[in-house]
Image 1 (cartoon, rainbow, N blue to C red):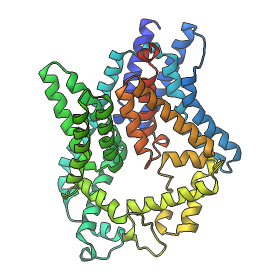
Image 2: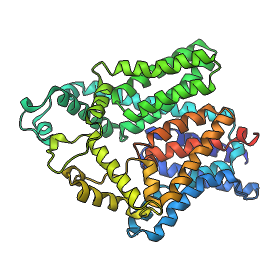
Image 3: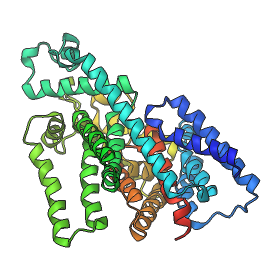
Image 4: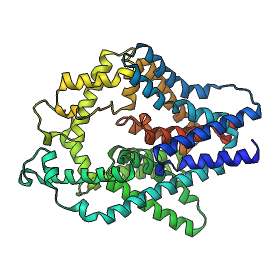
Length: 432
C-alpha cells in the first residue's frame, strides 16, 4: 500500500470510529469508501486470495441466513434483513485482506478517537438536558396521563409517576441523539473498560487526570440513561476481566470481583433512574401482558416477557430449520395476536429482542450453532493470547445479545463488526 493510499485508508478507518456522532447516511458512505479503498489496496498488492479458517467463522452464520431465504415466504423482508446484516462479510473481509496494516499504535489511536467521539455525544446531550431541565422535570402533562391509560394524576402511583418521567427522559435522549439508550450504554460500557486500562498506562499526570474526568462523565451518563443490560454486562465483564487478565493475587481478585456486584446491589436500594428500571423488572418477574390489560399495565419488562414467550414457542415449533429470515417478524406478530392478544403488540413490530433467538428462528439449529461458534472462537482467542480488548467486546455484546437484536441496527452492527474485525485481524494476530 503506497503512502497516499495508506493515509486515505487510515483516515477512513478513523472516520468510521466516530460513528456515535455520525448520521446513518454518513456512516454508510464512509464504510463504502473504506471498503473500496481496502479492496483496491489488496488488488494492487497482487496478494493471493486465500481465506483462512478464521474468516469463515464470520461468513458462515451469514450464509446460513441467506440459505433460509429458500424457504421464506416474505422475500422482501428477508432480502432487507440480509442487506442490513451484510456487515458480517464487509468488516471482517476488509480487515482480513489488510490485516498487516493494523498495528498496536494505530488500534490505540482508533480507540482514542472512538472514546473522544462518545464523549462529544455525551456532552452534547448533557448540554440539552441542562437547557431543557425544567421541561424534563416538570409534572407530567395531560397527554402523558392519557397516553398511559389514566384519566387524572390522582390515579397514578408514585412509582408509576417515576417510570413515566424516566420514559420521558429516555425518549428525549433518543430524539436528541438519534440513538437508543441501550446502544449508548453498550458503547459507554466498552469505553469505560478500555479507558480504565488506558489510564493505568498513562505516564503523564495530566493524561491520567483527564482520563479520570472522562471516565466519571461517561459513568454518570450511563447511570442517568439507566440502560439495564449494558449495565449488567459492564459489571460482569469487569469482574471476569479482573479474574482473567489482572496480575493481582487470587485472594484480591476474588474480593474485588465479589465487591463489584455487591456495590451495584447497594445502589438499587436508593431511588435513582437505574433502580427504577431494575425495580420494574423485579416487580414484573415473568408476567406477560394479557388481552384484558389497560394501557397503564404495559411496561418494557412485561412486554419483553411476552416477546420471549413467543420466541420460545416458535423455536419449539420450528426447532430444526427455523421459519426463514423473511418470516421471523410475521410469525412473531401472529404469535402476539393469537397466543397473547394484548393490544400493545399492535402498536408496532416487536422483533425477537434476543440475537440468539433471531438466528434460531431464522435459520434453525444450524444458524444458532454457527453464530455461537463465532462467539466462542473470538472468546477463546481473546483469552488464549491475552487480548483483553477483544474480551471486553465479546463479553459485553454476548450478554446484551440476550435482550437486543444488536446486529440488525446500525448502532449495534457497526460497533460489533468494526471492533471485532479490528481486534481479530491485525499485525499482532498474524505473528501469533
